[in-house]
Length: 117
Image (cartoon, rainbow, N blue to C red; front, side, top):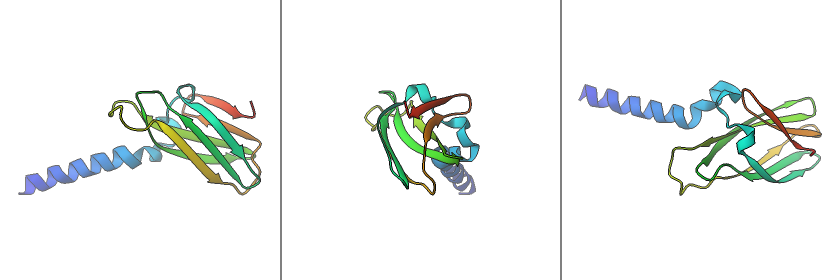
């Protein structure tokens, strides 16, 4: 009984970390920006919206972001080894406290400017 409980708890912790824990590492586990296609960007005075998709065999898991002056840095996370039937499109809507002049998709090693082009 104790071993079953330990195994169950281990599986729950592993999958919880796998689904949400990647955000603890900042941009290190985000998808390479070159693998993401942004098809629509809307920039308002107090919001930013992005729509796009990852590679065909991946699905969208989430994002993290931060403002650096008037530059919005967004790290998008997609996973590649889960079933292809999952949706690989992403839609991100962020309320901003300052006007955004530049938007970059980032991961640990790379930064790609998507706005303005």
